[in-house]
Length: 392
Image (cartoon, rainbow, N blue to C red; front, top):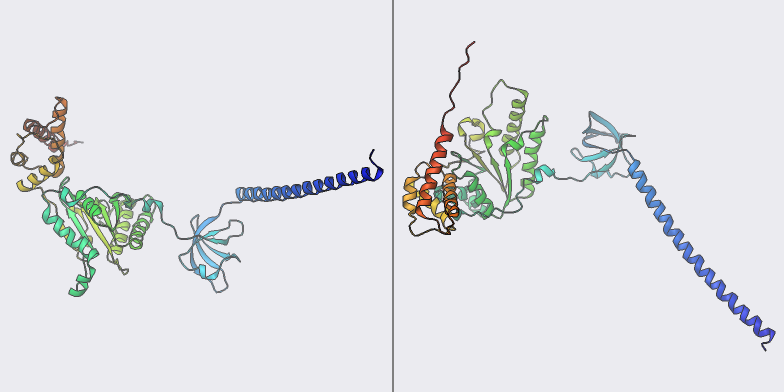
């Protein structure tokens, strides 16, 4: 039998273990309580963020001597606002973008500089798979383009030694389909410079001042990413001759063009930024954009001659499975008046004729039929629309 002392000892050990268990449980509950408090605090902060009124974006115009700031808000007029205590003075300067509280109309945050996504999308990230060897009949134009655009970027010391300023821009002009955009693609594919492509109509916006702002930001992006090349396709969309009379939309296009002129030949140097323009209608361009200092080199991309057409045919048939009967010289002779785009279309149509007949090789007769088809299409598109005179 156990003695009373042994029973007391066993009960004492059980109580000690039970106390330790309770202490451990209390510690676990306290840790859980702290964790739940943190979660409650987090969700309260999230609720406050969701219920808080939105902030207004603004641009600082001036800092007043009494410590307040003049801000141009995006939602309306200029405002004189207080500056939050958490804002450092060195962060504030004219032109800085800030966030304004709607309740107290005070600056609560300085927004870091950011790039407009509309402008950022103009940067060509994936290089076109086009090289100078893919262009036929434009050897002289390629040479001039490389001298004007590539050479100043690759060897600027040559121009410093000679003592001349390298050209700022090149204008490519000529009929549609002669290879102006293809030349620009080749420059983008061959050079390692940042390539920014924009169509002239993309500068035209419906809000006053938006087009000029986009032009300014495109050039700022090019300067940040220098060495860089800006390619403006269909330049005549914003650079047509200025007229005294016109709608408000035409006046806005003229404001955008004036901003383009200022960026190309203004006070701020372009540095390693080159400009390539392309147009089908050089006759309607404003003389101000054609003068030296803006487009220093004007390169004509004409209709290809017989040798040029021969080279263009070679470029397009080298990947085709053609029969020995195909005479490239004869095709170049028969395609007089064709531009590069029409020669490419001829090769594609010849391939389709072979596919329709279940053949893997393209014969001379396929090319001849394709030439006739493209010529017929040219005749249809070149027919003049008859003018109808209305009598009252």
